[in-house]
Amino acid sequence: MGNKHVVVIGGGLGGLLAAIKLKEAGYTFTLLEKNQSVGGTWHENKYPGCSCDVPVALYEYSFAQSMVWSKGYPIADEVEAYANELVERYQLAPSIRLGEAAQSAVWSDNKKVWDVTTVSVDTIEAMAVISALGQLNRPKYPSIDGLETFEGPAMHTARWDRSVDWSGKKVGVIGTGASAVQLVPPMAETAEHLTVYQRSPNYIVPRPDQPITPEDKALAVTDLESAMLIYNLNRQLIYENAERMSWKAFAWTPEGRAAFTARATNFLNEKISDPELRAALTPDYPIGCRRILICDDYYDTLNRDNVSLETTHIARIHPNAVELTDGRMVETDILALATGFETSDWNISVEISGAGGRTLKDDWADVARAYYGITVSGFPNFFMLYGPNTNLGHNSITSMMEAQMCHIISALEVLDETGASALAPTRAAQDTFNEQLQADLQKTVWGDEACGGSWYKTDDGFITQNWSDTVGAYRDAVADVRREDYELIS
Ligand code: NAP
Image (tube, rainbow, N blue to C red; front, side, top):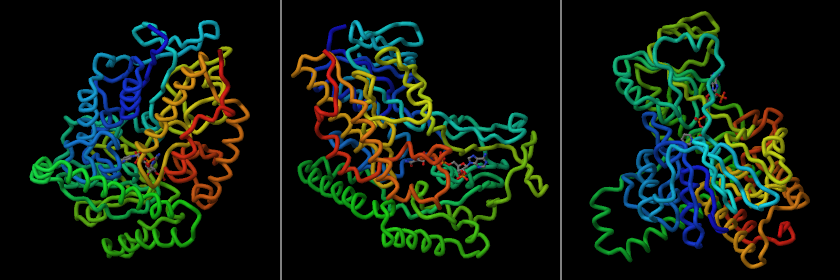
């Protein structure tokens, strides 16, 4: 393989973006995807009701609009279809290896290239590696006594078996996060009874969804120019609303937080009239600490006769029942584990070994630190999409990844311009960035001590997942490859 070959690890939306932009910039690539299909999280999450709580206009790439969508907020299967459409549209298939997980990537200080080894023990030589492994792909199973003795299906939301029929069955749902609130309404429709086990409530705001009908699409095709004008104006409106208004729930503005708290509280009060249920659904931490849920039908579903919200904690699980700490037993046929993902330890599944044989695992043993979540000191020509501290609460991750990919292509161009073999951020630049980042994060809601834990933080409260500002601020910060922050290796 020549000097312009890059290995991309992961075939979710991030990996596909990398593939498209590399191809456009004249690089060859091999994309390794462990699953038999592209789509990443949208391929893996098959639970009922799975969808994206970011509007289509913000979630699809700014350069690749699609007609695949049937609603203003994307359905998971449609995002997977979008991923396949990208493969087709940009003719990426010949460079994608499905069912092929990367096992290790080792930088050679002598050859100045990466040797990437796959599970089928093939080794690919590449000038650069782009890791697009995602943040939310290792299911977190609850450590509840007796779970392994449960006789019925007990499925994590990210490992759902669509052949399981829950009609007429007694269903237990553990968890009340973004996955649970999507899963509960469709399951409740046909379950005999559904019990939601809630450890903590979340703030929920309405989802202003609308169908995108075949007629809308047919009309757009008759006058694509006008359709694109309207689409772009709408996208800009949604983007600016996210950046200027939604961000205020997360920035340290009392007015913003008060307004968003009121929006969520009003929605709760409007939907739930039972004072006891309302109290149980009222969070005791500031809004924004955890993901604000955007969902119309969860509260309505909790009002159904065949649905109960259980706030007493689970003591243990028996073959056919859930036992609560007050001794009550809830007969159960199927358990849905909407218990989230392993995140903050960043135990990435590929062994990455950089300059001098230092591994990323060792480097990140205490805490994951990178330079704008894209590059890591000591790891030449190693790049990440959706890396540490690039998650958001208010806007779309795909916008962040577009900015990251621009930075990566610019970095590769620096190599072309200078004749250098590789580049990596200096330790000083990375440390300065992280000090400032953590200081800035303390000015956001995630730094609020009243927040408690979440998947955004380590157990010690160190924020490893979230970016500290708006997408615009991030895009500006990574627009240039600042030479003084990078070390060139000839
Ligand atoms: P999550 O937000 O981490 O929620 C996990 C839930 O499980 C929480 O309610 C948690 O309670 C509960 N839980 C965990 N362990 C438990 C135990 N041992 N006993 C009882 N309850 C337990 O996970 P998620 O809902 O899968 O969402 C994770 C992230 O995925 C989201 O924040 C979002 O970024 C992404 N996501 C996005 C979408 C979308 O529409 N774009 C949809 C789904 C997911 P505590 O809160 O008390 O810890």
